[in-house]
Image 1 (cartoon, rainbow, N blue to C red):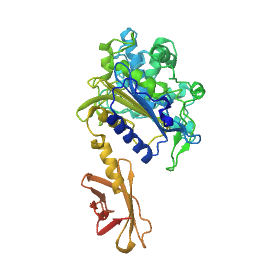
Image 2: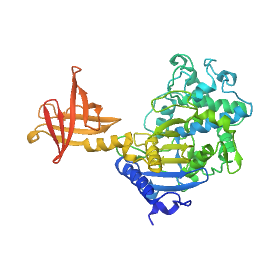
Image 3: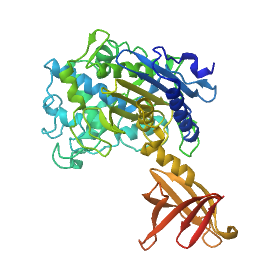
Image 4: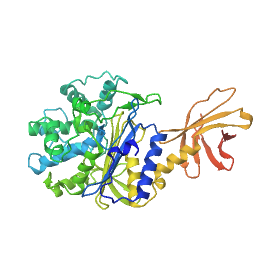
Length: 462
């Protein structure tokens, strides 16, 4: 039995072998091609776990396997816990979503900004990069030189950014971690408890999420925990785990996929799990409503709704640079999915979550836009040369597209140029000349291999 199956399960026997084979193939391919050391997956429905498995290694030096119980940092998936905590207090009458932040906190921000605006990222604050500054500091990868050592420092950083506000509250969606930091502060003020204590006592403990924690020392005490990896120079290196003590509400929770799908089951069941109700279903529905339009789908309170081949998937991704996450659920399909990895592959794990969801609901994951793009980019990437190798070119993925450089005896390796997609399926791109003219770039697949046509050049993949 493979090591990763040591703690895998398919107890309810409701997933067929072909579906499991497709899921395993999709995830193993991405681990192999995207420098992800380890990945854990859990799938559930309203009644329980249907499948849970680990892939790869939670630690490369020891080759200890990733399992369904491996604990990772879940990053911004934590935001939905802050949303749930807020809605619990709304139901109890301690808060209103229309409350001004300044009604509960002594902070110098516009009184027009409400809890609704913070939870939906419509306060007008752009990202203030406090989370990035703290992550870089704790990981030892870079220093922004901003005072963020205390609660007072963090609040002063937010207060100092009021000149950065864009428009009136509610006018525009701008993802802002600091907004959720303020939500956590409001919860502390109203409950007279540390935010992490409130979430632990009112959400994690009642749900039996006993391997989930905000505490770094408790994380280190678990044997089955991830080793965080970062790839600053395209080479994976172990790094310290950043603990989000000043922004726990924005992204500080640590958890295994088995706990996360229990949490998603609560949402599938309208706020109740195993006889314990945490919030009324009518109140919880506010979290999923389309409060703001975003490029990836409508945003609620800590949840985003995506369309996957005609089906609705409600979820959220997260990253702390050395760990990435996705948790999502579909009431219509009675499915919940949690994915966690101990590195950042350069894209959100929501894309892999959508692939797993497609495998479960019928469509071939490879037909989804993300996977088709990856396949096409992989086919076009490589080294090319012109007739007799006088000119050489390199093509490689970069961000959400490809980049190209062409060199030779005069211009050396050449400079990287981004390729603008025109029709990826047909291999058609564009780049810009120094004068700003659009230059077609075409990849043609032949029996002899891939050819690339750029300007005057015909280049053969070698």
